[in-house]
Length: 162
Image (cartoon, rainbow, N blue to C red; front, side, top):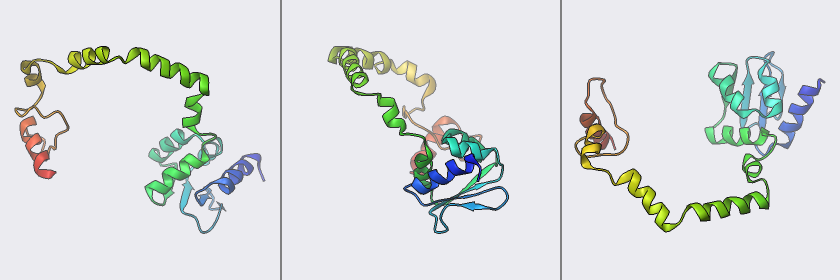
């Protein structure tokens, strides 16, 4: 067995989600009672699975090189299981980094400084909001049922849709 397939088999065996991989030639790796199945349509995706490049696997999916079978929640858990490590833990980088982040946050976020930022971003004239919001000043998405709708009509359509 190739070293690449050995790495993939270890990942599948250690996955908390029963995960099966179907190779481009039809060979399967992993349990037959899988919760998630990755169907590789292009052998270039093998290296992405082995290295845990989940973002590249997403790109492979868009390009039609990989397909997934299973619920989206299970697919997300399976993707997390093939990562080389926890991205959350990697971002934390230990107690010293955490302490520095906490100190910077405390310094940056005083009540007076935060109030000033809120005022700068939101306490603007009605004339400003009138330039780009609908008459009701709705600050959210709109629902365009047809391309010729105005923003105000699309906002009303959103309220009706909700």
